[in-house]
Length: 122
Image 1 (cartoon, helix red, strand yellow):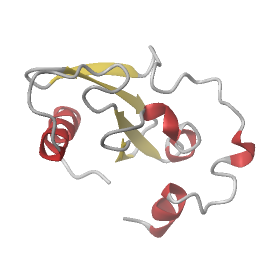
Image 2 (cartoon, rainbow, N blue to C red):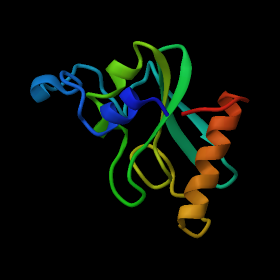
Image 3 (cartoon, rainbow, N blue to C red):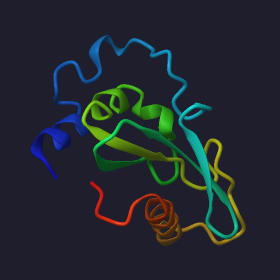
């Protein structure tokens, strides 16, 4: 992973979250960028932004959602395709009926990514 991307994710790039001003884009509930993918027992919600080499944003396993990346998504979307996935049971993603585990969350993310891309993602 590129050092600037790691720095951005850690909030070390000046201006990456400049002023903490609320954006006008409804991240996590954006009808223009939002899509669903069925992983067998649940429809998972994800949003796509930008073009270029893909980078996947995953929020915390038990808490959080896509909207937490409201300051990072616009920066990354300038040079990358951003794939922001809402994990099962969070936001607009259904919880499904499979046992909740990190393995299941990883499989869900893999399925969403593979239906969008065949190559590697960051």
